[in-house]
Image (cartoon, rainbow, N blue to C red; front, side, top):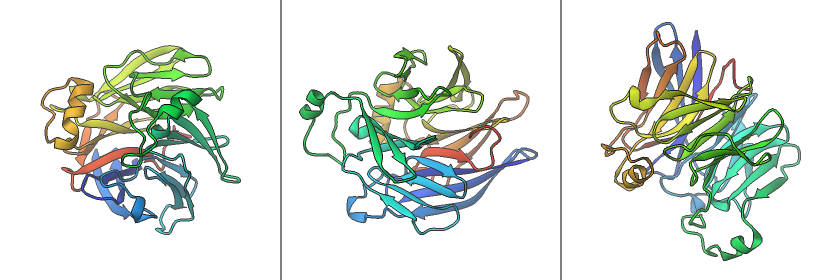
Length: 312
């Protein structure tokens, strides 16, 4: 059995995004690098150096992905964009998730969750700042972002009741904002990759390498990369299958290792390479890792399985 994965990310030294295609053979427990593709920002004048592609979703034969300030779509195996969508409030876009209305957008820099209709491409916003607080924010963007962030919304999805589940980075928690209740325990570091599988489990990662799910109100830690790696990079990117999960880690360098240490309190954080790690649910099976090309400067942001039997 083989899984094929698509990884969205970038390079600290480039304005381009990267799409990396890999396969995993469960019979041989080996990864194969299929393609490492450069994706250029549709407007180079607004492209941020080192940001790259962030969110990614797959819709049949199309993919939707985003840079920090724009959402783009194309067919899986073609390079020309079908759609390019800008919005005045798009700042530091993070995760994308499919939903009944279209695509759910974690608009991190704007402190909002936006919904993009795939019928008329209208955008609805759920703002997490009051008008007073929003008026107090910096009027000038720094690197296309109005910092500081109050919440740092890293990711979001809808559960089976269409309730909004949000990963709040600054709070190190996942929250059901419709029920106004915590989904996760208080994590030791920033949460990421909030998503729901068909069995109604809510999954998330934390940047220090922990992977959890919540089911019927109970949370369980499923994996911890620190048990498999001597030193863990910035953990982000999660694809869930029936056989296991694939999780990504971004390279640690002088520019981000200090912040990573402050949010995780992990030691030995300098100069970690970027890689992907397969964590099987069957404990008798091996954990498999692979560095991605140019691993010392690469970023992993989102991972999607193209032939999964779990994710919608």
